[in-house]
Image 1: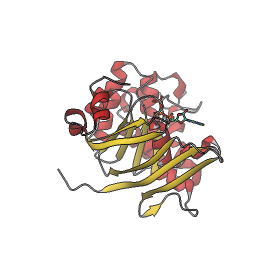
Image 2: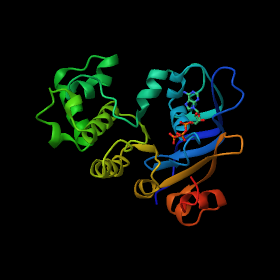
Image 3: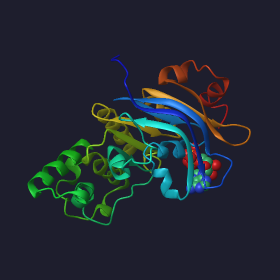
Length: 262
Ligand SMILES: Nc1ncnc2c1ncn2[C@@H]1O[C@H](COP(=O)(O)OP(=O)(O)OP(=O)(O)O)[C@@H](O)[C@H]1O
């Protein structure tokens, strides 16, 4: 295996929903997310998987007032520093959600959207970037004749791959995926999983999944989260996916991956 380089270093991260809440949703999480690897976040419902992944590009703050302790280092900077440019951060760390969230626009315009936001891109260049992104999302053959048609007319699986195309069009360093297959049928799920395999050549990926087989299929590293007796989310164990599933060190991980719990 090539040398592992952390793309994100999470240190003692604690996150609270609400400005005055005293009970955090996740507490004291420390882990690295390695470059060009797929890291799966698994654990029972409510343990803070989505919350965690959304703290990595500060999208969690869109939920309202929040409190954050600890740090998330990316590109040599703590993203929770005051002077961070959030738009830039979210371009570099893109996100794909549970349900496809396309805009009511054409297939083409959905992918071009992020590129047009902050600069003028000449049409020929835009065409090329859009095509490369859609090809990168393994969707080109299915939509190349429908670029001007509404994206909402695509199947669920196609929509989710178009969301991935939209996310990669702005050339992020990292792609966060929050249960990207939960609304998809098994065939569409398989396509997205194959795509994740290909994308890791170019991107660093962190994926939340409820599906343990999926974590085994797509990820190189796995973090197991659970809640403590106060229902506060915490990370129990982080390691290579094979180790986490075949020889977990913590009893709670063992119970969860063997299906005895959660
Ligand atoms: N916007 C919010 N405001 C307040 N509390 C929230 C909010 N979103 C999530 N929480 C709480 O934070 C905790 C962690 O939720 P989160 O959705 O991160 O868990 P999860 O592991 O992703 O769950 P699931 O697997 O069910 O999606 C839960 O107790 C949840 O109720």
